[in-house]
Length: 227
Ligand SMILES: Cc1cc2nc3c(=O)[nH]c(=O)nc-3n(C[C@H](O)[C@H](O)[C@H](O)COP(=O)(O)OP(=O)(O)OC[C@H]3O[C@@H](n4cnc5c(N)ncnc54)[C@H](O)[C@@H]3O)c2cc1C
Image (tube, rainbow, N blue to C red; front, side, top):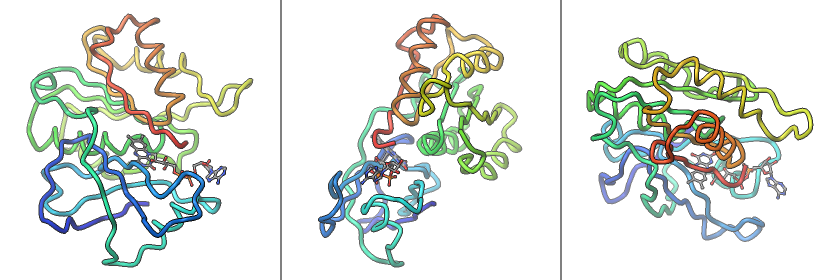
């Protein structure tokens, strides 16, 4: 589910990949408290004074998520930010191979980056790899496909990853790594952005540095805690 917010004080200065913290001061019954982080899914150039976030909405959601989903049009929401260093880096992206890997809803900051890179015409060689356990998690698919149809240097792969037999909540990092190796032209010099649930981001980052010898300085991560 996407949520769109007008910024009360006008345009908000943020970088593609930044996140916000939303707070519901009236929320007393959530065990994790009244605040959550959300990456900004819109890009600075397409946003103006309108911000987009996206999250999963499920029947067994937390009180926070229920409060968010029950928002009425034009109801004010408190937001803090922008925060984060998982951002587009224009100087390094220009003319480089940049590999964006999003697991499930972890693709949100990558959406912001892709639309910004297209707008800035950085001419990066962009790869988006979207991992999911279920096809319903391939959010923004239509928007990504339409962006890639007008940008020949953007390639998109969607991969359904299987849970590990001994620990169903964990993904198999080596499977994703072999797919990555097949797509990426130069593993050691490409710049990797990994985003999503902490477990899979950690596993992939480890696999990239130990099995594929990608330097740490070429791996940026955003860990979505709470999933
Ligand atoms: C930098 C950063 C950026 C982030 N960006 C995003 C983003 O763009 N989009 C996004 O969706 N998330 C994002 N997150 C994660 C987000 O902040 C929340 O932690 C996440 O959405 C989980 O929300 P929730 O706690 O309300 O749980 P829910 O989404 O309601 O549930 C998460 C899991 O916990 C279980 N659960 C929920 N409540 C309980 C309970 N009371 N007891 C036991 N189990 C429960 C649910 O069944 C589910 O499996 C980000 C996190 C960080 C750190």
